[in-house]
View 1 (cartoon, rainbow, N blue to C red):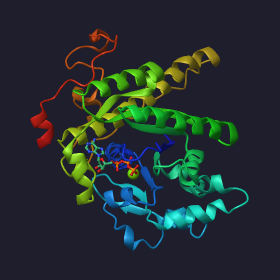
View 2 (view 1 turned 90 degrees about the vertical axis):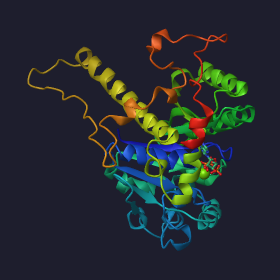
View 3 (view 1 turned 60 degrees about the vertical axis):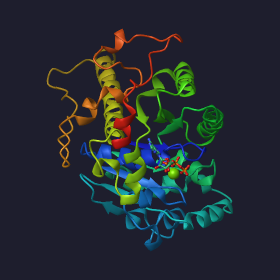
View 4 (view 1 turned 30 degrees about the vertical axis):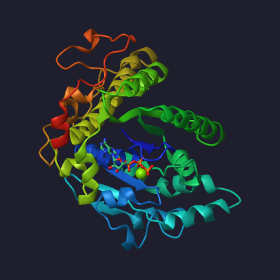
Length: 338
Ligand SMILES: Nc1ncnc2c1ncn2[C@@H]1O[C@H](COP(=O)(O)OP(=O)(O)OP(=O)(O)O)[C@@H](O)[C@H]1O
Ligand SMILES: [Mg+2]
């Protein structure tokens, strides 16, 4: 699962940073080596990881401007299994202005800087700023795929079409491999009719690209950054932490399924050698924080928008729009407490 994933959506406040920090922690909990890159001058990913953005000696700014190697700016984040952070602060705004003055190569600065370290990590997550600017373009050029967090509300759909057209332009110009990793429904409230309608439109348009995991609105996710921790290490039983574990599990499962599909096709394209035994995909070992083996896969079904708990997916009842119902309604009181 070696991939660079940009977490992008130019609309502000949709949960990009919350997704970046909590997904990094959840993937690290499965013993994957994760690099989290803060590409936002707000430095929220940096602070949310427990690093003081006002004390940075080196950051994404210096890396983009070629003033230091990426390796020299990395900070180990020790929560749980841990991940690695390339931090940022407001200096990144100045870096963007300087990039814009470059006659050539300004879109590829992050990709070039990342190249020597890319193979040191299983996953690289890039938290983008709320703009389709040169920083976001650098992230999309460096990425293999883009993960799009969306609040299911009307204006979000407008933002989505602008982002998709940018992705199209970047594919045409410089990064033809750039794929859509998935659309993630964030801060989801199943009691909100508009949220359910927008969710249904997303599924109609993007099909399987919409993650089945939905992220509920959850107070623990909102308060964890003030402790400088991912929610997993603030309250690991909270619905928010479990939802991000479920998302990590869904991403891993998707990857294993696509690898399995390629393996299944192998005998058609090449004669199988009797000596070669293809090992099964590695099972993630138990996380240090105590999550059971395969915890992401076993996260509660309430985090899966189109799955009624206790029923096989194929039998999921459909609503009047022909869609499976959104998240099973959890009691409000539970959400407030956890
Ligand atoms: N699932 C959630 N439940 C409750 N609060 C959330 C959730 N996700 C995000 N938030 C809160 O919503 C606010 C915006 O989230 P976040 O910073 O992750 O969005 P963003 O897209 O990164 O914003 P920006 O565009 O400014 O970078 C934050 O205060 C965050 O704590
Ligand atoms: Mg952010």
